Length: 97
Image (tube, rainbow, N blue to C red):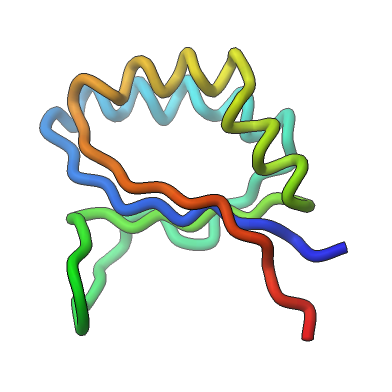
């Protein structure tokens, strides 16, 4: 069964409140087996558009990745982030070829 990933591009207006979001999202991420692959490090934009932060989170499978996003715990964390950020996020299944 292939792993799955959240791929997010995020602009953050208030880093202090965003830190509270990171604290809150730790609970659902642990519950659903999430592991950060990329967490807002330096990036070089080569094509198209993006945002200031790129985050890639690995999950055991697509069901876990989707369940995490839909969980009450993550939605509570997201409610902290939403007023101070703009994000694009996709949940994508990995390739095992």
